Length: 145
Image (cartoon, rainbow, N blue to C red; front, side):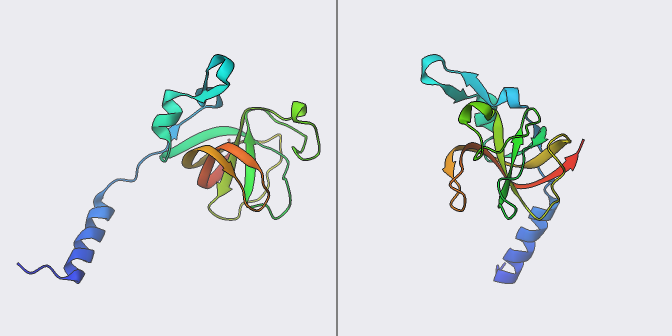
């Protein structure tokens, strides 16, 4: 049997369509880190296992950093301060930077939301805002809960 590019592409596409989409794993803020004592926070085994995989995490959208930001910040509890406007003492340690897959409206900092996207762990500095994050969810969407 001769395998042509067309046959290879068709069978690859059929195989991809036949695979079920990987369901997002629920992840809570309390499951992101384990306490590493004097060395600071360390990612939990669960978070490390989910790095690069789809997750859903619930929280609250922090006030927008700027109107045209490429991301929003998800926090465990509702907050009313901007991280660039207040001291670091006022900003919660539990936050996740969310890079949206498409445009979605700001829902307000008091509305609980569930974010679903791909988990990414490790230090990253956003090139547009220079905002430093340790946890991100990319290609994300959110819904009110």
